[in-house]
Image (cartoon, rainbow, N blue to C red; front, side, top):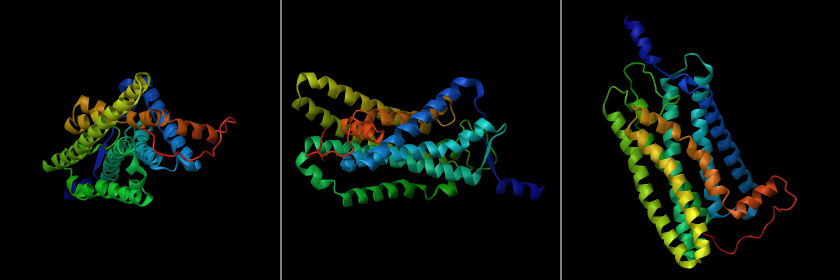
Length: 312
């Protein structure tokens, strides 16, 4: 009996929900459309920026980082989602679940950091254009990327000690979401640490992003004519919706991990990587021109002059 209990604790597994479940073909269609848009949109953005040298400037390099985190986020959840789709009784071991938790947490933190950097980039470009090119040098971008990595990995160090679950549990999601899994730990501190860590990082980023976009919006509305103000307002609204699509499900799933609302919010996080190419990519005229050039459109050229200065 003792041998059986010892073996069970060594190979602890979590049970994943089988898909499609009650949603049937509708859920499969939504997942297929979401993943197709994510891979196609972010892949084309990365290909366009890599293929066109005139896009190698801070605004588009940050967009490439955002596309990379979007792809990483989608790929982190894909293996267990496929298991839930194909296997009659999908399970995931403790070690694989721990790896997925670390990857998701790192991607969440990295994506929030990139969104903050993009907001600060637009603030400098619009409100302080004379300092923009002097501030965003390649070396500073490299150091910023290194800071993002440290910011995403340092809070993960105690995670292996927090996932000491007492027994197997049924998960409500087809992937190991950090706050849901860690609430099953024998100690009550696990969920608290993860939730506070995620929400504290996101809260600081939200405050700084909000201040940056408000300053940009105020500056743009003072400069442009009333006709172009409508376009600026549409752009500002689109960016606001993209931010809400990422942060609102993140906060909801972290605060209510074992509820239906938290489960729906965790699935809603899949929409964020699919929305970013549409919001941040298509609205850029330079990126559209580069994309048409990569796709072989004869009316466009992949060689374009470097812009003289930053554009809001």
